[in-house]
Each structure stands twice: as structure tokens, then as C-alpha cells.
Image (cartoon, rainbow, N blue to C red; front, side):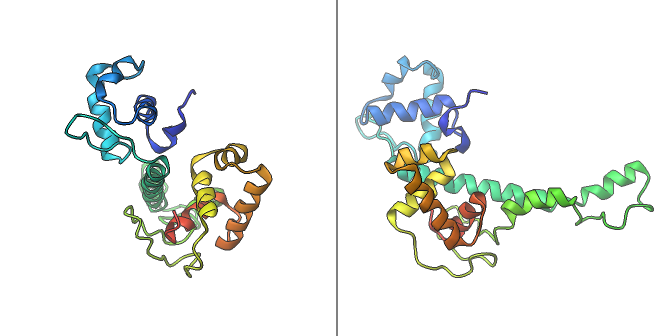
Length: 221
């Protein structure tokens, strides 16, 4: 499946194309979008409006010019929104084991249900996968980025990360490979991986996904 780079944030190819257009041509008008292959004139305005709602584009000024948001600030907001949505989805999933009761009723086997299966029981292997993300502590679910502390792992706020460490955390959430993250930060892969290891040690986890949630919980990203 051919996905665009920002699809992980829920940004389709056409909208990413528009954002990149204004990064290359800040202060231009929407008229220039007629040359973009994935943004027909009839859809361009709707896509611009959505990008403005997400904070990737600023509202047009009196002369109809459009300016893009700084990429780092834009991605920080998208990461925040995406992590919040993922956490809410995980919470819904982990609370849905009561469905087993209804399914067993259909099967006519409620009375002989295995003792270890119930509304809160889940297959062990499944639980491990859920714990990888949901076990990161009580995520605050604060999309505004106030960074309130949770009750799970990482109770103490601890020292805030340095600028380079914060950029590494951002890269951990937005790129799939260490090579791409190192290239984005302009450092060697070895240096990038050292920063990742240090951050994971600070956060007390061996999982990058859990580290991202804990960093969000502490208000670091």
C-alpha cells in the first residue's frame, strides 16, 4: 500500500501535498493549487479548511495569502492529537471484554463457560499486546498539552528533556526507522540510537511505543 508520509497522523495525500505546497510557497494564494494533481479546484478549499483546523495552515490574511505553520509545531500538535485518539481507542478495547458474555449466550454455553473467561478476562497473548500500549500508566488524555501527571509508570515528572532529546522523541513518534530519524536530526545513527536508549532508560521502559506515551504523559511532547 502506497502511503504518504503524514498518513500516520490521518493526513491524506492530497492534504499533505497542499501543506507542502505552502511550505515551498509561503504567502501565496489558494489559486496556485490548481496545478497540484491530487487537489481538484472544487476540493481544494475544503482541504485548506481542514488543514487550518488542524493547525497546519494559518487563516488567510486580508490579501488572501496563506502561510504554513512551522513543521515542528505542526507535527507536535498532530502527534498530540494522534496519541490522544490512540489512547482513547485502547481504553475502549480493553473495556470491551464483556462482549464475551453476549457471544457465549449466542453459543448457548454461558453455564459452562471456562472459569478464566469473563467480562474482564482476555487471552494472555492478547493481554500482552494491549499492555504494551495501555500499560504505560494512566495517560492524561489532555490534547491541549498541559501534561498533567498520571498514576502509572513515570509518576515523578523528573528533569525535562533537552532540545535534542525532545526532537528525538518527536522522531520516535513520526518516523519508522532510526536511519530516517537520524537523518532528520542531522546526527549519526549511532548518536540517535544512544539518545533513544537514554530516553527509554529515563522513562523506565524497553518499549518505544510505551516511551512515547509516557513522554506525552509528562508533557514532554
